[in-house]
Image (cartoon, each protein chain N blue to C red):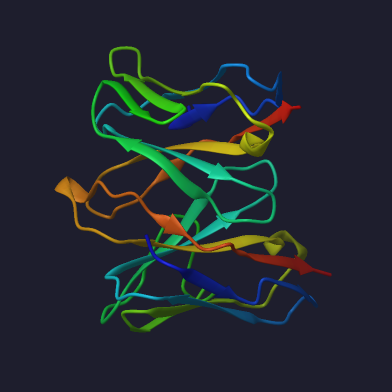
Length: 111
Length: 118
């Protein structure tokens, strides 16, 4: 079982839609999670990170962690064509600062 | 955040040759990391490079194949040695800017080096 599982999509939505991106993880020892956005031919850009269960909001983005079900989500409200990118979830922790990534979900927001 | 520059941005190489990738950061950082991103695969950590010590390699990656240098707090190199087509990938460096609790750190990435081996 992979440590972080993420549906690769692709996911296509109309502009203005609410987008839900999801990951599951298997190792409950580490509880530090990140979401990255990666545009084509660019490096991953940190969107959000959170330590614990619950929601964290930043503008149109909300990160949600459910430790009981080992489920992490990213919600994008009022999606825009500029949100079209690959979204990567990751979990961190441990003495070596290692991040473990999901495979990424390709999102397209159609105008 | 920090500005992280990688060179070259892309290259096409012959099998059996070696290529050195450079990563420059605009501020001093303790922790630098090298990742590989293959099509359809997760970003995978190759090694952690700390200034003044040997790089720490992840399972499946060895120093002879991926030697790393970290001469100072703003610079690192990764060499991909004796390349084969299986080494075709995107190679990314990242940095951790802050020390946090129990090593829980967001990392910030460069734009990567797109490497193709013929």
